[in-house]
Structures are given as structure tokens and as C-alpha cells.
Amino acid sequence: MTKQAVADTLAAIWHIESAKVVSAVARITRDLGLAEECAQDALVAALERWPADGVPDNPAAWLTTAARRRALDLLRHRAQAASKHAGLAMELDAQHVIREADFNEALDAALDDDIGDDQLALVFTACHPLLSPEARAALTLKVVGGLSVEEIARAYLKPPATIAQRIVRAKRTLAEARVPFETPRGAELVARLPSVLEVIYLIFNEGFAATTGNDWTRPALCEEAQRLGRVLAVRLPDVAEVHGMVALMEIQASRLAARVDAQGEPILLMAQDRTRWDQLLIRRGLAALAHAESLPGALGVYTLQAAIAACHARAASAADTDWVRIAALYDALAQVAPSPVVALNQAVAIGMAYGPAAGLERVEALAGEAALRDYHLLPAVRGDLLEKLERLDEARAEFARAAQLAQNARERALLLARAAGRGRDCRATDE
Image 1 (cartoon, rainbow, N blue to C red):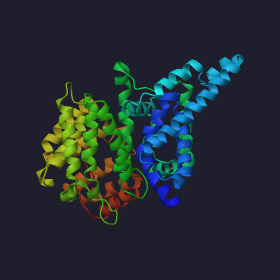
Image 2 (cartoon, helix red, strand yellow; image 1 turned 135 degrees about the vertical axis):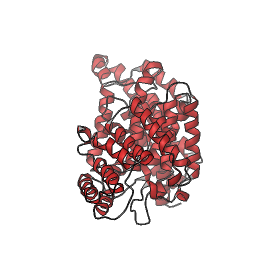
Image 3 (cartoon, helix red, strand yellow; image 1 turned 45 degrees about the horizontal axis):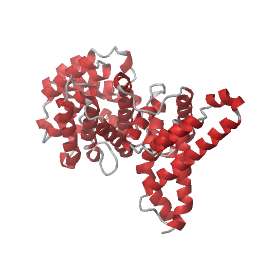
Image 4 (cartoon, rainbow, N blue to C red; image 1 turned 90 degrees about the vertical axis):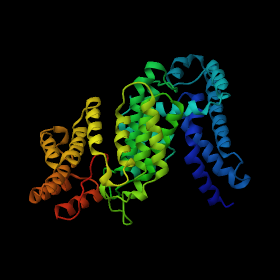
């Protein structure tokens, strides 16, 4: 195998296995930044040795062992330095240098190989609420998703230096706050879980409906978020909202191939070819939704949104969609998590269930919402309802205003086409 072939193979393996490697090492170091450095050292070692030695039979185990050895060597060195320089003990402790007793404890922990719990701890650490949502997303994609800084930068259309800075600051913040590398328990888990779910769904949503740039969707981000959600679902089988979020992502992702044409132009929900929807993902999503609904407690935000997505998934055609049920589900969602965006989506559903005049009445009531002042979908929805009421001049003016506010190039082009009197079906509800 050529050196380039080994590098390509290693890159594929790293994308899949890096989170396991980092999490296994983080349990030893109790420092996410140091754990990632050790994992990167193992990656470099593999690049140097595998072309000559060949790709190991179990490459993930090779990388994990190499990273652990590197971590243990560093900790041993620091422990020895601490014992030789007892006078620097307080300073060393402030720098998170582990003494001999801690080193022995870390060595014992290294022999325990509960990878699943390690990965869950990694997710909770990367999504810590101390960090901003943007920093959480970048750090999660880097250390849990295995994406490079350049890949994350491309996904979010940011300079690599900006993403790198976010990641460095996030790791420094966690280290300075001495955030433990562990999965919280009991009440603390309940308190932290919304932050984790928020970050994962933020990543998914940016992939499903890109806010900026030239691409309507970014499937790679959706795939990463789905993978993270599945890890959570395996480790937290009795938490309804985890399964509700997985259900929502699986059902939404089932439509990705149908959301764009061969030229990458958007195809909106009501015009999509439903034979292109991924039936396997739909089955997975419906199964996750059924599991979430079977668990005790009231339905949460993600489960309710998954139930709305399921209404579309179960409809054989756009005309078969149960808009009355969708409107009722949005009413329930508005009670659980009231927001102007939920109210706007509810107005769309009401317009589909009970006629455009009823929907427009709801939209007009939102005109003064400060949170929607620069939200392009407010005039887009209003334009759609006005068009259905044959108030065409008003509708085109609304589409033009929506186009001015839209940041995604594909979406802007679609709205401009509607302003010119071409195209139908505004992006609505779960789109």
C-alpha cells in the first residue's frame, strides 16, 4: 500500500474512531485539550509507521493504545517532576499537573475500557453550558465528530483561524474551570442535557437548512449530528427527549435527497418527489418517536417536532398531509416552548388546515415581534398566503423583502423568482 493510500485509509478510520480515542485518553488525563493532543500524537505516529508496518488488523485499538501510552508517559513525567520540585507544588497544581497518587489512579482508570460511557462523557464535556453555542458546536465537531478545523470552517463559512480560535478558547475555558471529564448524574444530567441536545440539533439544522452560502443543504453536518444523537440514544435509553430528537433528525434527513434538484436548486416540501425520501431513515425515525412517546412524562420540544415531521413522512402525497393534526401539534409545542418562530410555523399549518385567510390573520399578529424583524421567513410566509388569496402585487412585494433578508444564496434566488411571479409553495412548517 502506498503512503498516500495509507494516509487516505487512516483519514477514514480517524473520522470514525477519533471520538473513541480522545474519550479513552480523556478519562486518564481529565483534560480534554491534553487528551486531544495525545490522540493527535498517535495519529502522527500512525502516519509515520503504518506505511512501513502496514495497517494494523485493529487500527482503532492501535490508535487508542498509542494515545494512552503517550498520555501515561506525559503524566508519569509530570508526576516525577512534581515529586522532585515539591516547592512548586501549588503552581503545578494550578497547571493541572497530576501527582503520583493521581497518576496511579489514572493508570487504574486506563485499564477500564468502557468506551460507550467515555463517548457520552466526551459529548457532555464538549457541550458544557460554560461555552457559547458556537464554541460548543465547533468543539463538538472537532473532538466528537472528528472533523478538521478546515472542514468545520467550510461547513460554517468561517475562516479556519476563527474556528481554531473558538476551539482553543473552549478548551482553555474548560481547563480553567476544571470541568470534570464525566457524564453528569441525576439532577445534574437533567440540567445539562438540554445544552447537549441544543448543540447537536444546531449542527443538524445548519446542515438541513444552511443559513448562509451557496448550498441549500450540507448533508455532512446532518450525518454528524445524527451519529451523535444515536450515541446518546444508546447510552440514555429512558430519556424521552433524546429519542425525540433522534426521531426528528432521522425523519428530516430522510428528505435531504429530495430537497434539491440536479443543479442544487431548492425543492420545497410540497413539491418534493416523495419516492426519493429515504424509507429506512423514516422507519428509524418513526421507531424512535414511538419509543419517546412510550416513555412517561409530557411530550417535549423535540418529540413534538418529531411528531409533526412524522405527519409529513406518513403522507403518501402532499395532498394527504394531515394539516389539522399538524396545527394541533404546533399548538401543543407553543404551550411547551412558546416562541415567535413556533407561532409563525403554527400560522403556516393553520393556513394549510383552515385556509389562507386564517393563516394570514395569525401572521399579521406577529408583525410587531422584535425577534422576527429581520427573519426572512416572516415576509416569505406572508407572501405565500397573500398569493393564495390572489393578492399578487402584495405577495410579490413580500417575497422581494424576504429575498433582501435571506443570507443563503439558493434561498434568495428562490424568493426572487417568486417575487417575479415564478414558483409556488413557500418553505413552510418543518422545512
